Image (tube, rainbow, N blue to C red; front, top):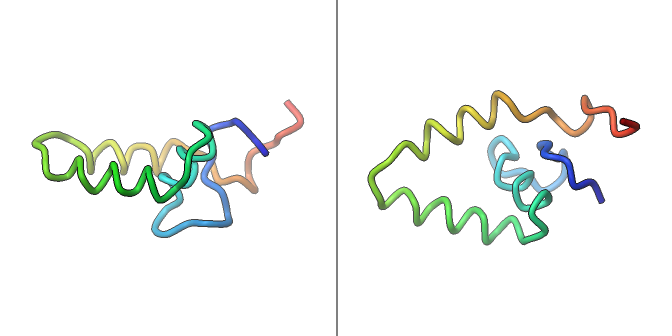
Length: 67
């Protein structure tokens, strides 16, 4: 299992950001999704952060894991 910050091909719901964060930090994707949904109740830039991560996080198949 990779500990890099990538969007995996398996387990995606929208863009794979929550699944990638869950893989990176060793937790379940459901927990990250729940935390993200709960954070939407608070004022802030959560959606913008999600969109930025979607753009910046590479797809798992494009990421070369040899390095």
